[in-house]
Image 1 (spheres, helix red, strand yellow):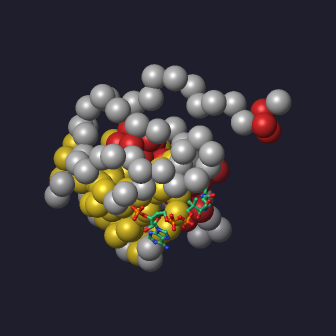
Image 2 (cartoon, rainbow, N blue to C red; image 1 turned 90 degrees about the vertical axis):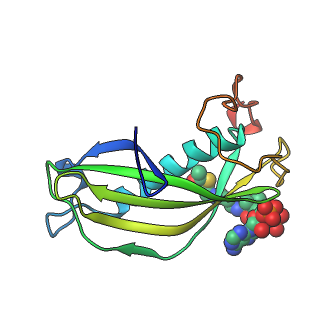
Length: 145
Ligand SMILES: CC(=O)SCCNC(=O)CCNC(=O)[C@H](O)C(C)(C)COP(=O)(O)OP(=O)(O)OC[C@H]1O[C@@H](n2cnc3c(N)ncnc32)[C@H](O)[C@@H]1OP(=O)(O)O
């Protein structure tokens, strides 16, 4: 796990043909899907709750791209723990060119209770461990029936 400028780069992706746009470079929609999932996993690990949802994403600044066959890596860092929210910063970079692909200054996740309403998470600091990872499945919802 590489750490750089306080951002921890966890996940790497291999840019495949299905991830390309009409220009033959990495499709922004694929990248945003990967980032949202990465941020959700980060929020679950930090808040100890599988029921955390994306609330807000600030401006997304695409500064360079990637081509088929490149490796990219995604990094996240919690920047603020609110009462029910967690704010983080994201960066994606190209492992081949060493260039930054994008940055997102602010991604906000909200911790939900079992009733689906924002609930206090009680945390104020980042964990680098697995101590908060939930140990049980989420309760089944009515939609699962
Ligand atoms: C991983 C995924 O992809 S999840 C799928 C996509 N996301 C969703 O479907 C979520 C849909 N949105 C919702 O259900 C609702 O907006 C909720 C439940 C998340 C939040 O409801 P709200 O009425 O905004 O809740 P509330 O006003 O209590 O705010 C909750 C927290 O979010 C923060 N917040 C609310 N709006 C914003 C905003 N625009 N920007 C930044 N933070 C915000 C608040 O400051 C508060 O944080 P705090 O408790 O740490 O101070």
